[in-house]
Length: 148
Length: 148
DNA sequence: CTTGCTCCTATAGCGGCTATAGCCCGCAGA
DNA sequence: TCTGCGGGCTATAGCCGCTATAGGAGCAAG
Image (cartoon, rainbow over all chains, first blue to last red; front, side):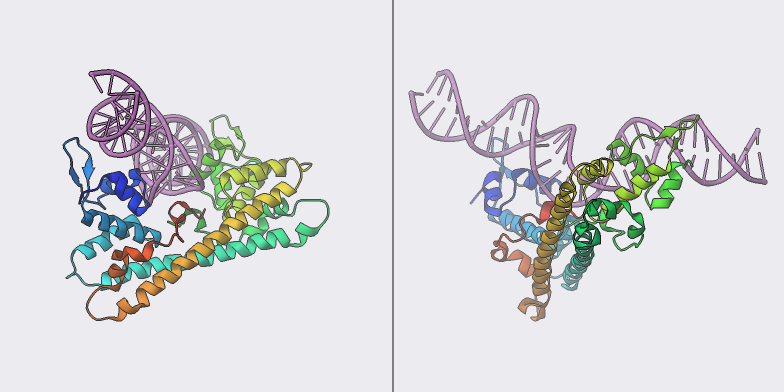
């Protein structure tokens, strides 16, 4: 059974460009080509792509997935590594949740706080302008953290 | 009172490059220059930068902050707009928290689940390889969502 | 006058895609 | 056989919010 790139894209809910991108990044092996130069995938390739997408949906980064694929390809390697990667990911996720919850609290305070209800001026703008309020360093690393 | 870029950087916990980036993006006005061509900032500029940083720390995007600054600059404009921006931001934050909590659950399941404890093979790898498990679309948009 | 820090512009890189341009391929219908 | 259309191909640029680098110029102290 051979599939075109569009077929495995549809099957896995991935865009065609993303599949080519994964190939360039080394996550997917270079597939066979038909006589016209188009990619032809086998079932194993489809499985591999599904693995990648599942891992992405769980927030693993492409380098992490590269490592996980390596472990999947060589079952004799110790599973502890996979567990460590998953645990590192879980840790990151929990840190983000904590950071976002702080953020949520601040936003709620901003919207419902004393300024918000008072007649004339904008509570939101006032809160932002008062930079005394932002000197706690809680959100220090939010600017560079991503959910992927 | 005039400040160099390094001074307002230190005062607001911003990098010098980031300040120049904000200027290029139109968040900060082009400041005066001294005779040597270096930027010289007034107190108002410092205030404005602090506003931007405070808003960033609360997860507002640069376009959102552009709008908020517009509202801050023109107090006669209706505050409802600022509230709407803040509410939109709060909504986004809450959606992210919900998505990350789902993710956290999945990761915990993956690590503590039946596979994890069973003797020989890697629970984590097996879970990822079994793409039946990933057909629920819960995490659909995580790949492109950012915390900024 | 030299040292060493800051400042300047311009450009490239991060992650994980997405979108575009400009071409080729294969198949269906008239 | 021609024509059109939906795919496929490569290469490149863009998104966000920075960060880092190269290669130079300014500036204050010793």
